[in-house]
Length: 92
Image (tube, rainbow, N blue to C red):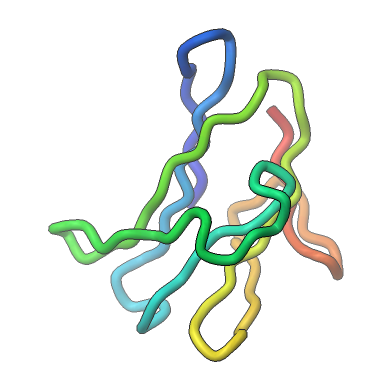
């Protein structure tokens, strides 16, 4: 699930969330907002079992991203606005 909300200074806050049953282990979201740096935005387990992390990006940008799980496993979010061979895209 991807949730958009207004952030300070005319930006947008994107919250990336994964369900409780997917996946096990450490997961980070990487993309154009963090120069594709693994570990820069690690999803944290919440009390309801889901995992999530929020990032702030400039309003009016397109965000290209993927999730990176343990052992180098890449996967996409089915809730992205568009999914291509190289990952998901969210239009703000």
